[in-house]
Length: 146
Image 1 (cartoon, helix red, strand yellow):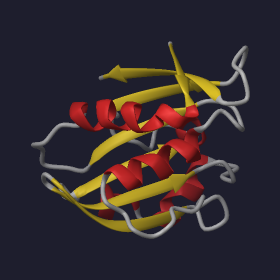
Image 2 (cartoon, one colour):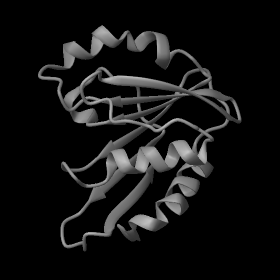
Image 3 (cartoon, one colour):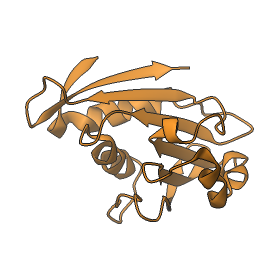
Image 4 (cartoon, one colour):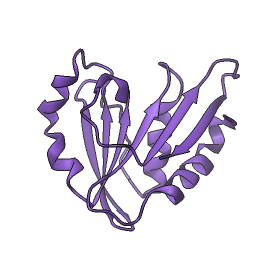
């Protein structure tokens, strides 16, 4: 895991975007793993800025999913999902994942994928976040390409 200052999350976002497949028949999926407060939502906010999202990206914890228009290669929308509040994987079906996962123009970023169980396609990238042993202004982040 790489030790990253929160001020340098833009570099991690750029590295992540450089590894996202630019061709495909379905959405690209990035899963974010880590405990509460590990920096997942903060990362998505920085990622959104790198993608040109002009509005403030808010945590979709209570609405589960938010979508933002983007212009990045084949992608025209960023779909941000926070599955933290799901109590059973079947609740994920209410978001109609077949619609956004089948859209090759969607870049889907999912926090708490373990709460969705086996209802996900294989992720294109997995990011692991940890704040354990880190100072208040840093995190440990690992990017795993699938």
